[in-house]
Image 1: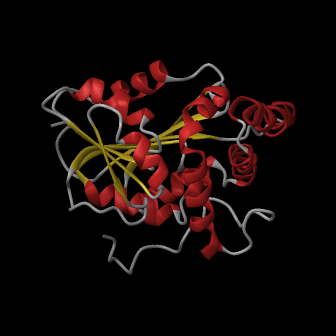
Image 2: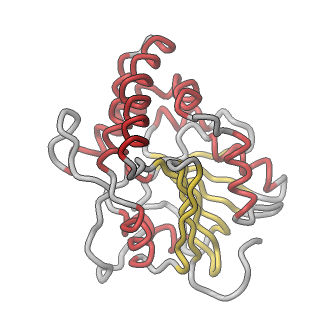
Length: 259
């Protein structure tokens, strides 16, 4: 667990979201409740939001950072295990994929997927020894952590020297028209369609919360800075379709990433 008290000041991914929670200490309870309530519907919700990305995209990202047979991969905030499944197909029988998530409902779904082991934990308090993994990945959940620096510090801690981090995240475009179009889709279309498809009002509420966290999230430059503050090396960002972002970095240490 994180014990270093000398790390830089905290960097929250966004401020409180009025209408959902009013104080930082309320955030984790809200998130756990939302995800527990919609776990059974989550994969269908993801398909609504994917905008053409999905299984093949997740797998291609993992290949690009070097995930291969025999690797040990940690999927932080694994949800229902969609990224974990893609990783298991690459690491083979001699590798290992472990998912960690604070939501019991999401872990329960993830645990039904072949080759995925899901356990309880948060990004800023990972229940693993130092230098345990070759790769740490996180799929579209960075907006839900309490502190970016703490989360990245934990990722660095559990990585082997030279190991790689890959964070997938949605970012609202800076261009006014593109931002308006994304807002119309994620706030105006996805929540009511989610209700229609799932019949779940909690699922509709989760999708409304998604847009608010995207709209209020710190800019990419702040995320890259938080990676540096946490001691990760070479942080970089790649963007697809103007909104899908891949943040990558390495743990300090000699040698190439991999088992």
